[in-house]
Image (cartoon, rainbow, N blue to C red; front, side, top):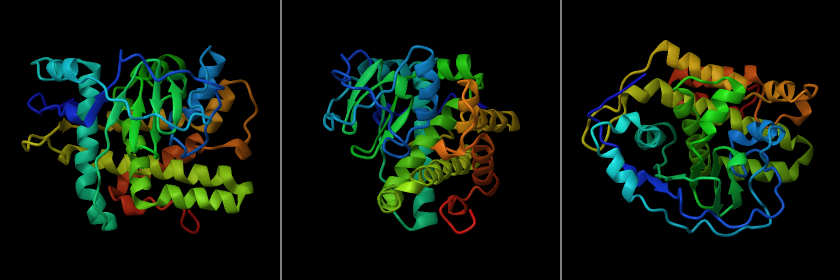
Length: 304
């Protein structure tokens, strides 16, 4: 993977809340399933809890999320010549690419206009419209405020604890979360919630379908990422290699529900899956990448 050094990092698509004092108390920490936060990291949270972390969102605190970060230092850093050597600047550029893709792909595929969403960089804890969250939750999307949240230290956990060390794991994670934003805009997430209420016995299975669709959307972005450009028309990626895609697939496999259950020393129980098995996550990311078409990501369809 090579980023274009001439591409401009648009930090207006990021809300940098690191060092802003966090988001208040955590209350009683409980996990959130599936799309109620649309979390890649919710399955990671099982592992995080075992190594000393905790679950993040406090469902009893349904407020907040109106904080604003200070992007001053981020803007200065990301306008420097060596900006792409910085983790936060690279991640901001990944966000730029993902949203540039959906601005075109969503109208073409679904006939709906894409509405941009910011990614919030936070440290340790943050206040969201879905409740208070801490770093143990991992990256997540909050449909109540239409924002993606990430503590960038998550990538170290991903590499050190799960062995997903490849650089392309990072844009894959972000593309998955923006897949949840697309689902929110299309009404998929709300429809899935209604189905869960009508059929609580299949709540986990429906959550898996939502998560696998976000993986597939991430694959569709990856296929088209080299065609995305900044606001001046400069390409964001100069190349994405087979090795990069292998890194994304490797990450998808390592955060499968069965892989996490095995790592935690528990028996594999498909009835407890909320994000899908390693093979399912690999399958649907690959389908999105192979077709490059988000319309192929109908995980809710008959026979899917």
